[in-house]
Image (cartoon, rainbow over the protein chains, first blue to last red):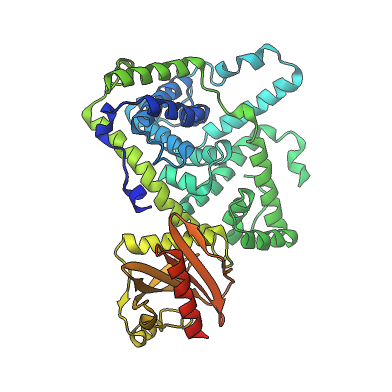
Amino acid sequence: MAARLAKEPNPDARAAPRGDQAAAFEAAVLLHLNAAYTLARYLTGRGDAAEDIVQDALLRAYRGFDSEHVGNVRAWLLAIVRNCFLTWKARDRRGAEDRNFDGDPKPFGEDHEEKEQETPESILIQHEQNSAIRAAIEGLPHLFREVLVLRDIEDMSYREIAAITGVPIGTVMSRLARARKMFAAAWREPETNNSKETQR
Amino acid sequence: MNAVSCPCPERELLLHGLADGELDAENALALEDHLRSCKGCAAAYSEILRQKEALRSDSLRFRAPASLRRRISAAMAAENETGTGTVEMRAHRPASDGKSKFHRFNIGYAGTAFSAVALAASLILFVGSWNRTPSLDSQLVAAHVRSLLVSHLTDVASSDQHTVKPWFLGKLDFAPPVIDLAQSGFPLVGGRLDYLGGRVVPALVYQRHGHVINLFVWPEGQMTAAPETLDGYHVVGWTQGGFTYAAVSDLNLPELLEFRHALQTTLA
């Protein structure tokens, strides 16, 4: 266990033959590509930036991957995605402005082409609700957005979120509680004219 | 904003923990009990569940475009050939030395952080669970490993039980039995305060042929007799005379059981 704590990817390991490693990587890490992309989409609010970030993250993951020493691959990969996002955000002027999503001409469209072809009313309504939810999530400040997405979209446990974001678990809990309150406020707004409020 | 529901402030985080399945059984039961009588908490709780339900929809998750998968495969293939940054990657973001150092740090950091935070996490989330659970076993092993890692094996180094026992007085709200087992081949080397499940517990440190045994003692709960093995460490517990004991060591299991037997006999 002590050895595992101390182990870091060996920078000189790149020259080693990587056939097995590549296969292991595909099996273990690429499996979580959608999760990585989803996180990047919510963090950036932009499809193009999310693609760059995920590509960067996957390549970093590939260089550092060691199947024996990465226990929780999904959480490990999401931590790398988050780091890549922070790097991107620091570099990208537009990224510094959290709430600027104007740059994305089709904010949610391109991954759902199949669904858009047939749009019976029920699907349309579902679509609108999901757009409202996405907008509410993306409107949250970064720290709260990431904790909400990691918990409720990516299904990470508190301790995994603590590891990914590098904060104590108590901070994760209080941020999550605040994030959910903020999300509720933003999400409920378009809903106020239906009956949800009176149910209580 | 227009929240009708006002949960008890001290239970607010716990409500989220319950909804997320992060509470241990004892706390979950207590909170569920409370929800039956407290309207504010019950309303807040059902609002949390409603939100979680809404966020469960698959269409809120994005699928990576096929073009991205192709880009990644190409970048990986190029990485294999050159063993360094790829042409495609350079086109997107020029890699400098400083940056590659940074990413190595990140990756190493992620791994280390998981282990470290996992330890810390189990300490906070399972407060109050003093009966034997897998989490208690892993906390015990974690505490044992920590005591070896950070050179904090003993706060009071002494083989004299009459020195160690008084040292705990005033630091704990109970007086743990302190017994030297040198005659049975397990000399006491000292004592330490440790932190388990949200409270301070004494750890007595024994030695056997260079192996360290941490004996944790607390005045409540139950410990089943079956030994448990985690990450190569054995956990052996028992309950006796109102105290619960858990011995953790990398010592081989028969000798650790011998340690337990020797202590049980002396305590009886």
